[in-house]
Image 1 (spheres, helix red, strand yellow):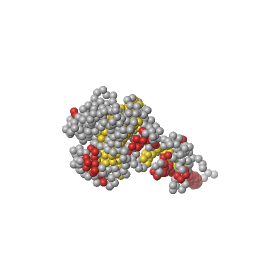
Image 2: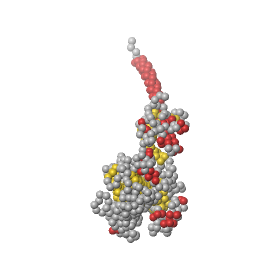
Image 3: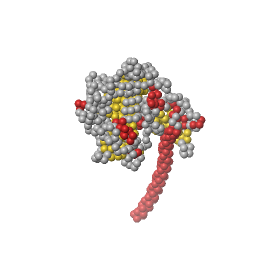
Image 4: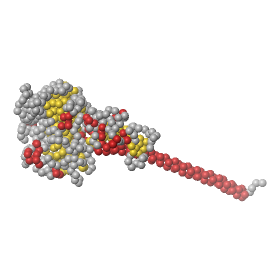
Length: 570
C-alpha cells in the first residue's frame, strides 16, 4: 500500500535529517583531524627551530672560541715580548719556524699549543687551541697565528697576522706637525734656527710657541689611507682624509685645529668621529738596529754595507747596480759597478766614511788614493750641471731610483734622495715586491734648482740626467712606491720653496717622519700631494723595517679558514 502524499513528505524530511547527521559527523571528524595535524606540525616545527637555534648558537660560539684563542695568545705575547719563539715543534704549521719551534718552559705552560684549552667563564662548554708560524718574524716582524674554537661537535678556525703597532700601519705618520727646526730660518718665522731647535720640538698641546711654523693640511690635499699624528692636526680649508684618522691630542672632539687665516675650514673625514684618540708611537733615536743586519758579527747572512755617498739603481730583473767610491773593501755579493742580486737578507746600509784611520774597509780621510771632492760636491756626480745645491763629500747619503723586484730595505746614516721614479716591477695586491727607505736624517725628493732666492721662474728648475736617460729632463709628476721613514727629521722635497710647480708627487706606501716635511708652497712651487696607502703593508713588511719604541702587538689581518680540526670524542 502506497503512502499518501502527506505521509511521503514526512518520510522524506525524516530521511534528510538522518543524512545530515552523517554529514555533520564526517565534518566533525575532519576538523578534529586537521587540528591534530596542525598541532603536530607546530610541535615538529618548534622542535626543528629549537635544533636550528641551538646549532646556530653552537656555530657562532665556536667562532667566538677561536677568537678567544687569538686573544689568549695576544695577551701572552704582550706580557712577554719574546713569546713569539714558542710553538708546537711537532705541528706542520710551525715547521718553517725560525728559530726552531719550542714549547714554553713548565713555568709558562700553555695547553693551547698541544691540546684544547678552556675558554674562561664558559663553564667548560667552549675550548680553543692554536698554532704559531714565526718564519718571517725576524725579517718582517709578522707572526701568523691559527686558532680553532670548539663547542660540542662544531669547530671553526681563524687565521690572523700579528705584529706590533707600528709605522707601517699608517699611510701618514708624524710626530710633530711643525717644520723641522733644522730647516729654519726660511723667512716665515721670527725664530732663528737655534731658537727653533730649543723651542719647537714640542707637541702643540705641550705648549709649542706660536712662532714655530706649523704645517697645514690644505684644500686639495687628499690622504687616501690611515693617518696618525702624535700632535694635533692643523687644517686650512677642506682637505680630505679617506681613511682612519687618529691623534694623540686627547681632548674633546673635534681634535683638530683650524687655521684662522684660512676661510671655509671644513675638513672631510671618511669615518664619523675622526680624528679619534690613539696613543703615541715613539720613534727610536736612530736606525742603528738595521746596521746589525749588515754585520757578520751579529747575523749569519749579512746584507751589504757601504760608506760615503752611494748611488743605487734598481733593475727590473731583481738586481741593483751600486756606485760607492769611498767603499774600499767590499764583501762578496756586494760588488760595485756591476749588476748584483738583492742581498739575501734584503738589507743595504750606507754609513758615513769612518773617521778612524785604522778602519781597513773604507778610505780614511788622509789615505793616499782616496776619492776627492770639489767644494760642496760628492764623488758620484752631485750637484749635477746647473744645480745650486751642495752635497757633503763623505756623508752616508743614498741616491736611489729604478724598478724594484724583490724585498729590500735601504738605510742611510745621513740622507736618502729619490732621484727619479721608484716603482715596483709587479703591481697590485698579489705583488711581493716591497721597498723600505729608512734615513736617520732626511728622505728627500731630488729637486735641483738654479736659483737661491724666492724670485725663481720656470727656467730655474733644472733638467738632469737619470738612469737610462741620454738627455736631461725635468722630473715632473714623480712616483715613489715605498715605505719611507725619516727617524730624526722629515720626508721633504729638496728646495721646496724654489722653482715652478712640477705637477703631483705620487707616493704609494707609507710615510713616517719626526717633523712634517713640506713638498711645495700652495699654488706656486714644488708638488701637490697624491698619497695612497699600500694595503699590503698590513701583512708584508720591508726586511727589518724599524718598529716604534715599546709598542704593543696587535692583530693586523684576520680571516676564517677551513676548520683545522674536526670533532673527535674525548
